[in-house]
Length: 268
Image (cartoon, rainbow, N blue to C red):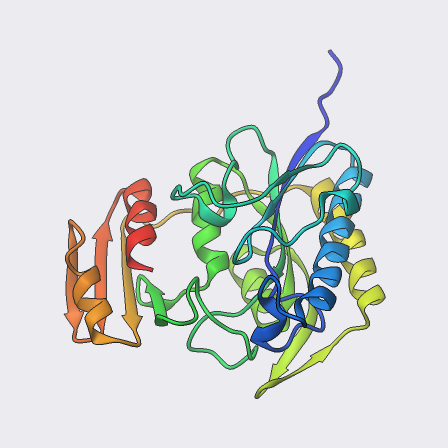
């Protein structure tokens, strides 16, 4: 029987793309968006080429930033499928990932709210959320997305973005990464765009060839979200099963991963 090629899912954000430093660069139709999204496209395409070079027969890209209408499909290799817009499901930045994929790749990822490793550090919503914790530990979008992938048995095998999120990915999952920038106050120190593209293409190829395994899930999930506005916390605590932790924090505890991901939709 002929061996089937690997099937690779690629989620792409923008705040961890090399050169991207200010929020004005991240919004669709902003004058500064064009240059930032050009590099976002280049790094996404590099990840696709790396996956294809590793023998992938199926590569899907998820535009996972803000409007989800940043990536130009004509700039991706032919045959790649692009997911645009939001399907309003618990899978969010990993929408359409399922058991049909062998592994996942995260490009342009960033450190979490409450940290100073990237001037664009945040978790899901920069305007509302001060900090997200899972089982007591400060939690990033990467960790939430890893839970989604693990639910379907799809390991994340490669991450690119700021150096802090790459170090976290290495520590948590033991995977290959490419740190393309680091934060310093409101500034960033960045790799040359072409160097970042090479690192990502080569890194994805090696990671997809190697493959990976999903992390072990905890027996219970305790999600807590601290808001900038106390009224947001009060509102979130009304979600079925949620609780008020303090004036600005709501929490949700469950042993059911899907229930956690649904709660995340409404709390974050």
